[in-house]
Length: 524
Image (cartoon, rainbow, N blue to C red; front, side, top):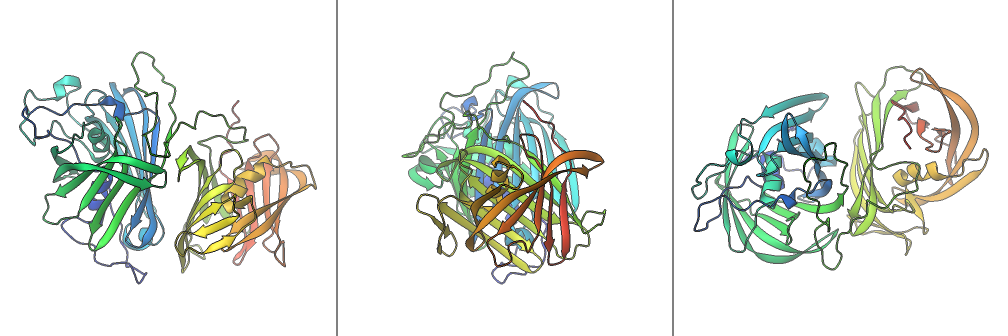
């Protein structure tokens, strides 16, 4: 599932040794997705009870991954995409995205993969899986067709203690273990099969603990996972103590370094079903109970904004008058949910160069913003530009006017109502863009706040991918001694969405502009 790409480490604190009984990639797969499920040690050697409520249609879970001293070394998203008839069989569609960031991505383990698994609704066993693995400039796809009988026929008449009832892949295993009772003092013997290899493990339910995360405090079921491969990785997994058993925290130790995977956000957006003939289990309380800050359903509240959740804008980047792109950018409104104990929108921007660019760039910025004001309460920066590399997180307190660095604990005074660079990009689409009318806001630019003034200069028609599109040209200036030094211009569409069609600036290596690849069709 996790196919590593390793290069020579360039950071002095990156551990160069990556070989062990389990590689870091395999261990990450194990502790993220835990294990396939076998029988518990009970008097009767039957398969443990199966709770279909763990498969909540529309549930999206986001996890932050810390490795050693690297904060936000990666992130994981799990999504129950739907229940319907897939490939001729009734099934539940599970999706996962796994990606590493910053220094870890470059020097330790490069992951940017997508996984889709289709499982039977009555037992959680997979019948088809699809993997998309990205390595450098190559993308490989694979499909796996599990030759397992459907429904009750998938279960053998009798199971011995520790015998697996069917084969699970890593993604289906996440939800299969959540569907188990996880009774106190129970022991579950498990097997993982991934890329032709099997990993035997033992899961012991050790008790209950109060777990504090950025999205609340949880009464959790504590478990210890022992991998039968020679080395003790000290894997601990904590599940919400409710019927959904949401993994809220997973910890392990690999090669002398700590790994921590913590729940960072959750949302439940129940999608419409294309076929009404099959029942869908959607609990009335959609998210796990946290104390004292329970997660609540927030995605149902409509947003009066010129963009929608799920919008993704992709751009090609060009230097000067060249017609061959040197990079790409993507702006995405990923989801709305509970992030860092706040109702928020998750905005993600990524940029990277391709081919023989003057400077190699691989940047990602994630912003968590208030859905009503679009003001950020957290910004995560993972920047790699030539020889410059940094990973920093800021928590913004809009009431007290402070931005605090999570790494250095440095406190920066900011005006109340300060945006970050990503939230400002979306906020300007809500401005009154009357020609020659300025709009000024405060933005947090890396180390200090600045005033950003956005002025609509004129209306003009631009040509984009062979189309002539009416647009408004915006000028963006700061309060620096040379306010228009970068000559930033954004052309937005004239309709109510104000889609950014083209972004231009003058950089140290010359003029650069980014053109929107596909103009989304407006929907009511």
